[in-house]
Image (cartoon, rainbow, N blue to C red; front, side):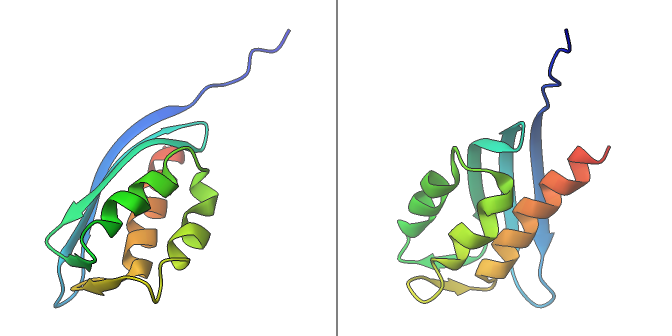
Length: 101
């Protein structure tokens, strides 16, 4: 009987945009599913409560869905000092770098 491999990772990583702000993510993932995510940094997001909605929408979803979910916020939120694409990058890069180790 084969026992399925379980992969759990807890990651904290950040990026700093050239001339921009820092985007940080604390991420807990189990088998490609986001269990917990906290996005922070010194960038600004308006409306401010959107960050909690983004984190909520990502929780329980596959890392492969991050770009699609975050792209839904383009046009409805304003990100100063970073971008939606930066958020996608820091989340997917953190997962990719740890899952390849």
